[in-house]
Length: 172
Image 1 (cartoon, rainbow, N blue to C red):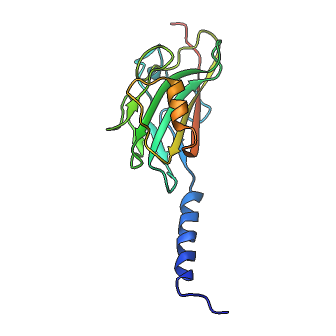
Image 2 (cartoon, rainbow, N blue to C red; image 1 turned 90 degrees about the vertical axis):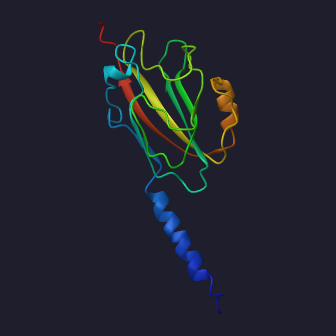
Image 3 (tube, helix red, strand yellow; image 1 turned 180 degrees about the vertical axis):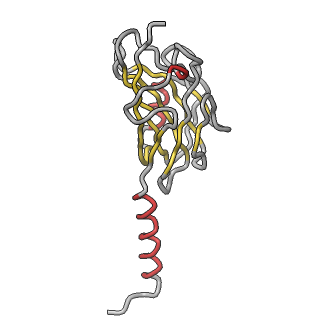
């Protein structure tokens, strides 16, 4: 059986895409290790600025990125600390306390637009920095609620990645 001439090229493209995705979509922080302690600088006991975050392996077909930071150990249930959307796919690092050009922020559960860091009432809590690769930009007004954000990303998540840090108040 004779194959058309384009098949080797198709196989090459599939092979290259497969290797790129094997690298893995990921988010990490130079400020804390996976499962490690988040430094006080990034909490209510410090400067209360967001930690630096590194992004790698954005999947093909991604049009924009979105980030949520939440505490599932809060007494009233999962508590949202930060919502960011329309992060450009070319962004590989969010600087500490920074927001990439063009990105929008939602209202967190402290009632503020932007980041408010860990501030557990007692004990050690886990804080998940969840990054979503989306197949379309979000059309949300700045300051949108978590509910509006969740509704907007529904059906648009291409891939997800997360990094988790822990924090307990020092009692200062």
